[in-house]
Length: 207
Image (cartoon, rainbow, N blue to C red; front, side, top):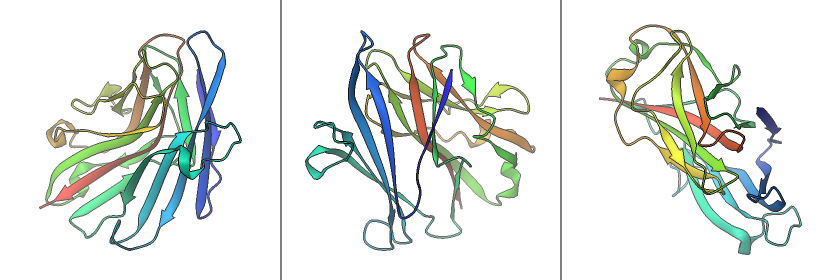
């Protein structure tokens, strides 16, 4: 099963994602605010400030005392670094499949690593969330052209609040040296338990 939850983008975008207990009762909401970060000490060239937490008082607003995580996703500082966001960053994607699900929208079409001269490393990042802390959310980059997972791209989290994860291994040599449709395979650690991801991106570093 896939769920798309629309984000309203202006300078501030908010995502309201409802969690459930293991028994299926509706629990507290996890809230996420995406705020445009102007150039400054946090991001030299600007970017996105990601603020998240649990709506303890259930009023639908992420208040200061409810903030649990603050992250910055900064724009590339030079031609030595290229950040590529997947196209549907106004949407959170969800699956309850233990086999894995590849969405047809979250795709970078005609991706070819050979187009990035002097690339010497690459990583994959995203926010991950699960509705049950005993069930993991796992993402992999997926070569939709050849129907294959790209090795060393796994991101895993058991957080019930959006957790930013990034790959620790340089998987440049695992990326096909050809034009492919680059997608994402999302998987729940248990069939029927919903997991989510949002703001997926790849970062290519050049020499």
